[in-house]
Image 1: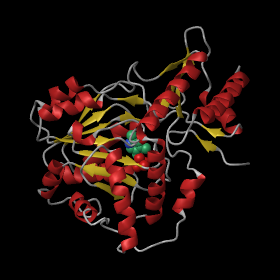
Image 2: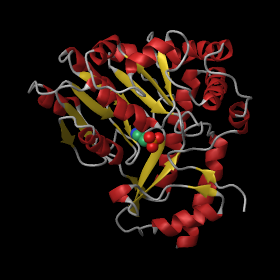
Image 3: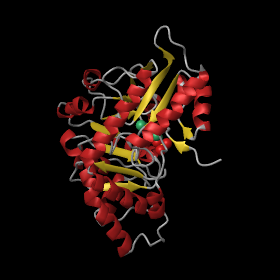
Amino acid sequence: MGHVKLHIPGPVEVSEKTFRAFATPMIGHRGQGFKDLYAKMQPQLQSLLFTKQLVYLATSSAWGVMEGSLRNLVSKKVLCCMKGAFSDKWLDVAQRCGKAAEGLRVDWGSPIRAEQIRAKLATGEFDALTLIHNETSTGTMSPLTEIAALKKEFPDVMFIIDAVSSMSALPIKFDELGIDVLLAGTQKAFALPPGLTVFTCSPAALAKAATIKDRGYYFDFIEFQKNAADSMTPSTPSISHIYALSSKLDDFFAEGLDARFARHLALAKMTRAWGAGHGLTLYPEAGFESVTLTCFNNGAKPGGRAIDVAKFQKLVKDRGFLIDGGYGKIKGTTFRVSNMGDETEATMKTLYAAMDESIAKLA
Ligand SMILES: *Cc1c(COP(=O)(O)O)cnc(C)c1O
């Protein structure tokens, strides 16, 4: 049996070109070769994140920096915005780090709105908040611009934003938004193998981190800043990932960021239209759908038949594609289809054809 192509929302399919870059012969991480590699990427990363701040490279999956953000920036209490499996987990992680934390919960599939956050921050209890821009478990995007605008009212609150499954698929303008941390793991929209996280911090975040005594070492933001200023990382990074990232960034800029953003939106719309053609409804609230993945309800419109998700997934897999059968408490009642990374209209159409055949088999 050949390779089953990944259309789950991470990890996603990695190109041959990226794997070739990943297999570049090893170099030392304190040598000029590594510094040149990182220095070549720094302006590309800054363009991608729309920032003048240095962009850091952490050898870990996203959770490393998600936990690190709490350890670097929370001294009073963190407000964890919760609307799906990943954002719900962030509260648990904060508590495991011994931080005072409170959840702001909305129904899965709903976005978090600025009004709800404002009401909480107005209590003056919080010095940080965590927000997942694109909640991957539900395919729901929260309105980041409206939320980031609150930073002006609450300048002392650290705005920690997870863009794990959205960074590089749509513009997230770090400096303009005025947020404090922006991070993404590379196995989602970047289409790299898992194991690397890209992130940046505001000057305010670095100043706050400097006041926190127990921020640890491996994810110490001050260490990342100091080392990045010299085109290095605090500890030995996964140099293979960094070669792969460099190759990928060249791809991004060869395509053009605007074209890349437009491609993701167009493919997400195509996937939604594919589902509508089968009478399927979307799990996220209308107007807040993700542009990198689509989360469908398995139940068809009134009168239609529900899809047996496990069977459907198996039939699609037999045709060479892995889609996701729903995450956490919505496993089996939803399914998710990713269009992030290198997908094109043509590759998505081969997936839709396999899903069409599979749905026909279910009948
Ligand atoms: C995948 C994902 C994570 C977790 O990433 P790991 O790579 O498992 O650490 C966190 N947040 C979001 C939004 C994700 O999609």
